[in-house]
Length: 165
Length: 226
Image: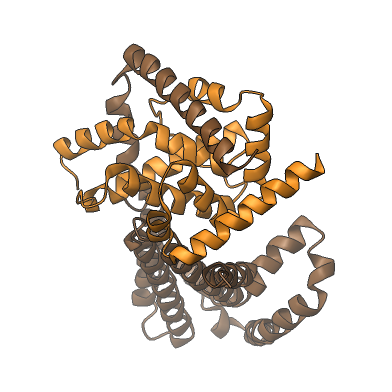
């Protein structure tokens, strides 16, 4: 069982990773209610995994890995709600506002994300977050060339979407 | 517009998110810390209700087996049910332990493959728990319950009961391959109703097919550079 000190460290860690959790949820869930569910599930798994966090990876990178893995599994279990809701100190309404802004670019971004499968969403998230190709390959467990090819395909998809408008 | 424009849009939204959260945190920092921790601790193991039900059944069958020693027509099914219950519980706990042991910090592809494999294992266990449990279980349980409540050995009580039990066990055993076959042949029609779908999920292990499909998609992702 974790001690009180570790619990407090986890809460501080969770607070520092709020944006990461929200952004992963945004990428994988269109619906704000689903985002809340997903953030809850990620927080629970982060708690379970926290004792194994040894600081070798950057906290944000570590969080992205856990959160993306949970997000993909969560989407497969669509419709199964989390029964025990955590009272997370997280202002979802505040967080939703910037990402729900109705501009042509944000609509384009949403449309592109919605057209991607689970693994490509993860890739797109890491790209948007500024990871380079080698880091993305490491996070996904694939090769750099695979990442480059996939990003080129996503670019082509974006151009095709823009062409249809 | 290209991906770089979308990235700039994302960065802009992220900056706004950072600012919004900082403002909000100043207002409500640590308000719910202790409650959060209590809820998180509850996700660290099996529930008390599950444990009580599981241990309760084992004790019930154990006590009934002890009380029916010498009455072999009751004792044997009781012991078989006890073994079945212990085995099903052990399989469930082992699956949960394997799921808890999954290192979610591993690369995404690796972990998704591992989760697909675990999903397939679980689906197989659920499939056979349904086939052996729902179809076969009730007949010996009927015998054991009568002994436990009324000290009546139904098999010894009458010729009719012996025939009744024998027929139900035989029908239950015959139903297992029949159900598997019917689920494959009649699946598309049955799947249109909610009840049919849930029965099919249990019998055919639809999760199993889904897990295999996920594993295939992951393999495609891995080799898609070409």
